[in-house]
Image (cartoon, helix red, strand yellow):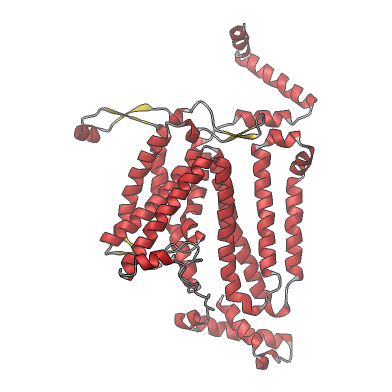
Length: 453
């Protein structure tokens, strides 16, 4: 990025623009770049354009009520009140059901994308790059069309096959997605300006990395939701709990700095958040595992054209007896304990949310420090932007999706049947005969016939 700043300075200086040939211009550019690399860190930082600082959007009511407090305690109360408001809103959208949750995830994704792209535009708007914001939003549309199209085809197969327009779109979905992306790619190439090639390619990468971080992760959140709302609620709640408890422990007991990227983070807050989140995860999992509404996969009912959450809970959500280690047995006097197997998995989720999850926040802190900003936006007073609240959530979503695929999810008979129904009649008959021969060879088909008789 330092090279770009120096090159931008050269382009704006008429004495540097008057070069006898392109080769001499290249030599001059290389010299400027070397000087930039050789400079000290302070010089590099001084060349970073600053993003305009947004005004304080704290509600006037809170400002008046907390006017007598110090800035430290005022911030504590503002964060606390807004945190309770956000938790209440979280409970509300859970009550409204999975469809509303998916829409909220999409809205959060768009807002996070807007915040990151706005930072890029605020820094580089003086270069007058053509089509930067237009192409950024166009690529967002293309990527969402691809991912949500894949989701609709996967989870709404019967509905797609029933409607002719949807069936055609589903059949050629990937080709259409590629054609849309290719159109944006060609538009980017046509927008290249001679003086700003390198800067434009940096911004092209900026947009695509933002898409990778924001859109891909939000798509994984929706996939986790289809596995059961518990896989959506528990991980998100663990990140929220860790954020709150780490802040509380750090506020009251913090003495030892944790990482330079985030000077306010302390070891006391980190460790206190870890143990608090593990306990919270186990308790929340115990409560939610007893409700079918939370543990059953979210499926689309073709008869009512609506989502349904109803099933026979799997073994993962049925109480089982576990023998305690001898050490715990001597302390508690219990030989066994009844737990839901999901509670054991919740320890892994809570540990990741507390140990690895904060690194998403550290990454965001480094990003903000690079551009000399405190928050991504000022959407939520005392908390910053939406991206400031979801920097850890996106990392958590990827872990949960990988965890489910590696340790939880097995073959799905309903999806296999959906794929079979999409085949031609002769192909279905061939598979039927092959399966019949296999069952007879295994000795299972006669047993099934006798059981039916």
